[in-house]
Image (cartoon, rainbow, N blue to C red):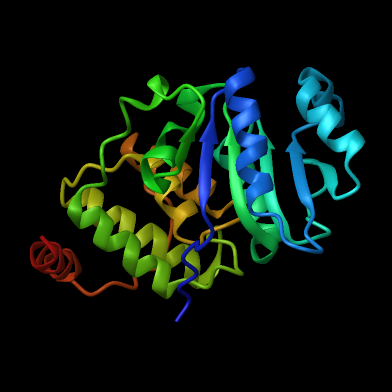
Amino acid sequence: MFDRTVGYPTAVASYDDKGVDAAIDWCCEDLEDGDTLTVWTSLKSNLRNCSKLERLVNRHSNAEHITGRGGAFLRGQGPVLMAWADMDDIGELVQYSGNRIRTLCVITWNQDAIRPWVSAAHPVVLGGGTAWENLTPELEPVVLEAMKSLTLTVNHNNTISAGFEKDMVVSTLLALHDAHIPMDGEAMQAWALTDGWSGKNPQRLAKYVQDINAGKRPRCRRVLRADYIDHLRRRAAAAE
């Protein structure tokens, strides 16, 4: 009912001359008449850190610079080039502008900050690719089935910090933990990003996992049937 799987192409580029050039070319290849090529940075001043991106924005009328502050809303449809973003930044951008993104390319500054996203999204690798030779392990099959169910069940327009959405998410995570099924919060956050979760919900999901793995038990109303984990195990076995 609430499936919002990401359908646009993605890429990741190294932060060097080769990577930045390739990122710009890759985004320009998908420009259509009336499109805007949007360059995202966390702060307005960050654009000065890369002369190639600064020239792109200043010299082309169909290129626009936006910042992470204030919601990062895209005013036009087209390719998006995010410079030095992390997974939380990607989630916020998708929340405010997901339906306007034609393609998304992320220039990395810290490979570990987006390694789980690269592992889950399988983006085109531009520039130097050695940083991505070692990726985050895939989710445990039962965790994967749980994430699929949550994606279809929760309303992604709502926060998972309250109400039915919190009950569903926390109940599921506690059930996985109590069944001694390993959970990787960052890997689950990345998977959620690639499957249409947006805003702070992927980030909140990772925090719930972190807290539960540390022994905390967030409050929630139990909404799962007693054999839910067995149900997930059967689904995981059938998928394999």
